[in-house]
Length: 147
Length: 147
DNA sequence: TATTATTAAGTTGTACACAATCTAATTGTG
DNA sequence: CACAATTAGATTGTGTACAACTTAATAATA
Image (cartoon, chains in turn brown, cyan, purple, blue):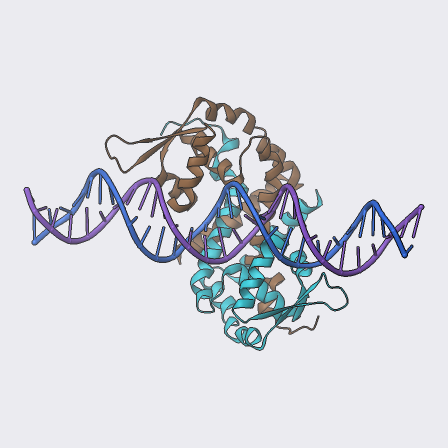
């Protein structure tokens, strides 16, 4: 493998690449855990929003997760098909859908409660270290969104 | 929006969610820049591997990027269709594909040289800060892969 | 108030990720 | 050498992401 060397375009030097690999790796790590809940990673994230808020609109979910209806509509239909949520129309404004937990969706929360701790174990890192990484990521996200 | 409060399952408290959002945001930030090169983010990453090595197998790319042939085969076909790479069979071992840059693929590197600096500007953060975030992410990735 | 503009969600199409499976080539072992 | 096991890559199917567009409902304003 002949090398055309220049630091600037080396893939392993790129922060973006570290974050890209880490994001994929984290989602991979969650997969077997979430399989016991029959959820994908994004479905788990959306369920977390609902466990916190119980009723939200598609738009509100989109704002929290930075996702549009092109991603969310089919995902919410799948959660609906699993019986975890309901998707009723808002009577005041027929354009809006109210996304609510069903009894089953609420029940799933009990099973999910064990997930975060199990995941933290898998990282093999302490709370402070992880908090520091999170802080750096949140700062970078804020800076990116400001520019 | 009624709240069912428990710190543990709050989406904004999750490191995974910070990294997920950051990864999506970074790829979003790259999009307009890479559009001038007619590359997607992953295509750009793969081209970086080739600008570094000039000839690699599908397996080698997969190991560097932690991706399988299900992702790479169609992507490499697209890069081939754009005339940026060639995909010849290895004569020693007919199972293996040698992925090489074409003259056009090599030429694209000149345009790509401006990308990293432009992106760093968009982050609005200094080199040391960004290096610290990268270090934390790389540590976490290593820990995850060890467990 | 008629009509224009905006908004919420849905649809379509492209491109990842990745599991599961398949095919063909190569390697290992009796 | 035969044949089982392994390997490289391709294929199929599901589920994100997101751009571009459509539809239906609501808001704005001439």
